[in-house]
Length: 142
Image: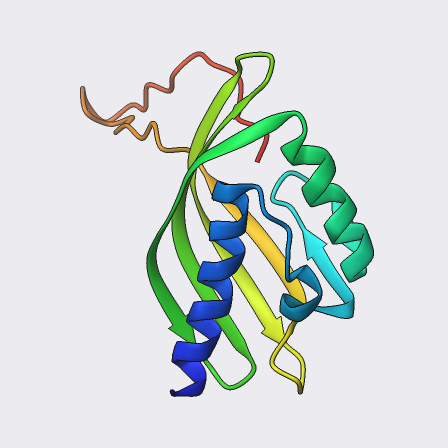
């Protein structure tokens, strides 16, 4: 198996863990001192903190979809483009596109992960002419 394929499998495993709410193996995916930054600001330092967040979050919500679109690789990093949808126990549903950038340690585990989100409700503000017409809505959290 190539290094790129192995990295893709690890990222796929992480996404699948969210779909199944199974945190078994987090310590095999993340280095002990890994840093995980969500697109809207929260940051978790260390595999134990990542595990705590994973378990706590899955106690109040469910990931409905986390679909991988494509991967990009270089020597020490991998980027993955994806679609995400979740539903919280209070009924709130969120869905968006995103990109995750992963830096790997020497043992093949994630040492740094940063997520970036993108609104899926796109539109052309110039559709009706040369002056832009933007939607009157609040910006999404990411």
